[in-house]
Length: 294
Image 1 (cartoon, rainbow, N blue to C red):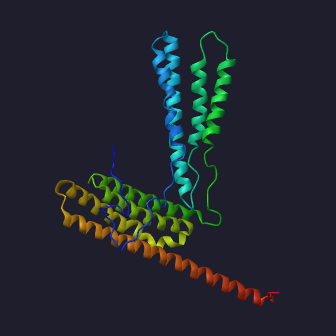
Image 2 (cartoon, helix red, strand yellow; image 1 turned 120 degrees about the vertical axis):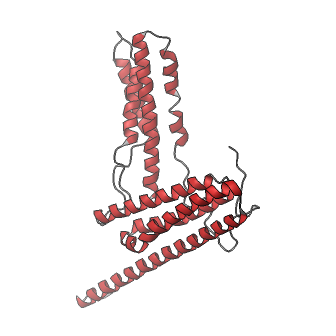
Image 3 (tube, one colour; image 1 turned 90 degrees about the horizontal axis):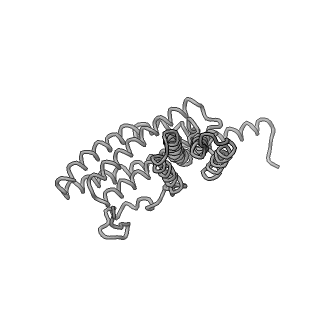
């Protein structure tokens, strides 16, 4: 569906003049290989169409190949999404299971099964299976196979941060889904700006799990309240288009954005202070050991 273009300098601009907000594409990444992943759903259609012009055995083989190729395409797309989430975070565990690599295996099996015919040899189907799996892996790459940013980080603390951030992301997703029902592009952009600000705090907490205690209420209570307020507002605004309700909701978003930004700056200041203390303590110990700069 077509959408009207809107930006900071495009009328009507829903962002308050005194709230600069992030750049329109701040914190966003282009979808990697999304077109290739979606294109994988096209070849199975050919097997599905040709299956009904063959005998029972050929029908079963082609439908089996179609199912394997659809499963491979679905796994590949889900693997790419998991990889995007992995790359977006400063600290992340590897995906629980290698979806893209399993997609490569299913792609090879599907192509091999589609090329095999009763009474024919296995050399050609096996060759196609190996080539298909290899080319799929070369095109989409392997899944992340190692944890990121967890060296020196307590595993239990990292798990607590991951659970808190996942819950917070759920609140943001619910806010964005709810505001779309209001049918107002400017409000959707404002909620997107706030989500970008909130995710900057998430990345800060992931980089230093010790910040979770100070920011827990922002990830839980505040975002839960923001989600509930957004759902209630979207329902009301879609029916009434009440400008007073819109102004009040925009004021709430502005307050949330300012407070999340201030809290993130406070976390950064605390981290900087902690680093300064550690450096000073280490210097004092070096001096006590008789180590002096040259």
